[in-house]
Amino acid sequence: MSLGLAQQRASIQRQVNTIQKQPSNVPADRFFELSWPPRWVNVSSPTCDPLPPELLGNLIDRAVQRENIQGDLVRAVIKQESGGRPCAVSPKGAQGVMQLMPDTAQELGVLDPFDPEQNIDAGVKLLKSLLSKYSGDVSLALAAYNAGSAAVDKAHAVPKIPETVNYVSDILELTKKP
Image 1 (cartoon, rainbow, N blue to C red):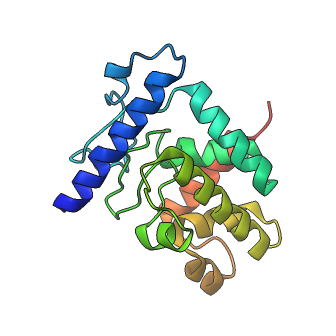
Image 2 (cartoon, rainbow, N blue to C red; image 1 turned 135 degrees about the vertical axis):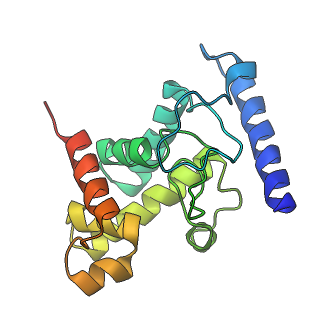
């Protein structure tokens, strides 16, 4: 656990250094404060503020252009998963902005799951692969992102896991156009 905390602290310092180099209306010394944790974030872990909207938007835009995936969907996943907080850690161990499980992050070549750019790039690749696997069915791809492909494949549908049903419903609601 000490190694993990040291890696997280180093990642946070790199993020602070990056933010200090970019214009932002968020003071660097207030960048990693938490005022509203999503219910699934382990609040006993180190906490941080969401990324500034401009920085988060730029990271998302670059990733979705590379993978040719809908930006609104990725924004909704990030809002639901972490609220845009790069240091978020779920009780199950998912990490970073897009809440990647450590094994998944490693499979996708992520060296630092708390680095927003690496995390978003990998999360978008994962989401794109799930959309491909489920022939563009957004509900199934989201269910697999939340509960895993094995659960979706076994159910041949969104699994009747309350967390997953709510997750899919909430994200689909966020992506609806007014």
